[in-house]
Image (cartoon, rainbow, N blue to C red; front, side, top):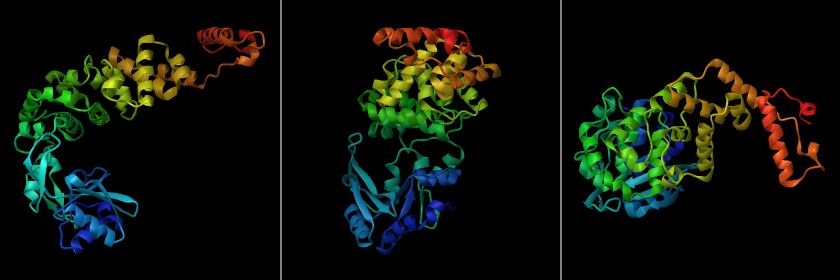
Length: 381
């Protein structure tokens, strides 16, 4: 079996493989790039496994005129930049002792030992520079079945890094078969170890939840998380029961997945803090949640928030109440988005200024909105 793709033959990537091969070392694509190539999905990041030690990778890169960056050299990882493209090269590793993410490792030459350190069988797939696939742990069978399965003992894999609990649900959302459900052994291990989530940094939890919520259809995975009590552990007060209707409405309206829109539907307490949202994400989430409570008509949503955010509010509201927006509702949203308030501050000056000016403008704007945007400047003044 071979993988193909422009990414595997481009000169920048070939140059990285060639410096390792010319030095007498193995160069094996690994992980997401191989998995996605086998699925026919887009490949973004290039990860390469090798039996060369990190210092040797650095030396070979420098000699070839490439730029090595010691991004994780203590753990065996060097990023080699070729033609402006980063390639993450990691030496084969095997665990000696495991302390969560801070496992003590040795560098080696055994691909099987390296594969056994990874999380899921579908991520323990390798490919040589010619594209021929190496499958030391049976990952291809799981990938074909769209089965997310931990490598060997799920409990041990989770103890190595409790974030793997969330990764399990995220990978099921992206790559799992919703008709077959989640791997029962893996799910049981996640439930048993969920207390370990409390020790994770909020940045890591937030990044993982964003990726999960950006999946085409995260509803089955979120339902399983909620049933297992894991969603509540991450986002107390969250409720995923309306996620499936929202995903259906997104599909019906050709609306792309959006993590913040879906977070607004989930609800929950202190979401921005627990997931370490950016300021822009926090502001947008707060706006969406407030708009859901205010229940403004579609035209006013379009005027105040535009078609994008206004449409998100309509979709989330519809999913929560179980009733799809009508074509007329969308037309009203567009009409409001195109409306322009005809009164300017200068129209009320110098008679009014400061807070009084602001209050008068808001009152006139409310009157104009109530008229269906029909009143003109002269009518309002």
